[in-house]
Image 1 (cartoon, rainbow, N blue to C red):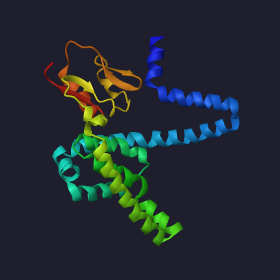
Image 2 (cartoon, one colour; image 1 turned 180 degrees about the vertical axis):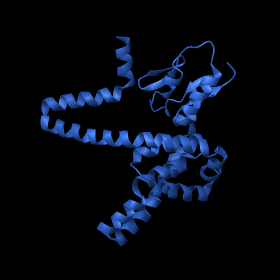
Image 3 (tube, rainbow, N blue to C red; image 1 turned 60 degrees about the vertical axis):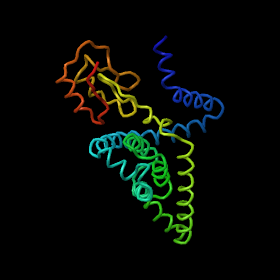
Image 4 (cartoon, rainbow, N blue to C red; image 1 turned 30 degrees about the vertical axis):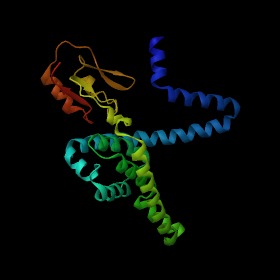
Length: 240
């Protein structure tokens, strides 16, 4: 019973969606079927896209030094940070939800909230492929005016968001220095590589890797597991 309650608590949004579909199936079966069909389309899209995004984000996290992110996208980057944020968002590929893990990684490494908002907003509404299609169907004058007004709006909203939302309000701003072995649950994609390489230390819980209780560590095997993790979600800090 405890496991069931734990599962329901960990997946409360999913349970809520399923409940809505069940109620809708009783009231309007046709609408429920169409809703399930649409949801399955987006689920398949996410299954194909998100693992790639997590891997790329982890690689960028490993390759790009924190100092570089702070210099070009941090609070002191000012105009060059704004321009770079617009460029990153505008040349991006994929749906907007693919931007979230990428932006969390950037914020963790020192990007300002203002520039994060600009990247997300540009990703959503001023991507270059979208602008080309907009010009084709609505004309270059419409696209240009809409683009300029959208840029002004993004600048205003990014400034307001930076005034209201603080670094500690984001999940990446709540990180603590943890000694011993830890798993970044935000980065973990549930691939089970760690549980296969080091089953005595790692196990899966709600499709995320967690650490078992341990009294000693096989450091060499642990290091191999850390390297094997495709999204670099496992950390080890001495001092326990």
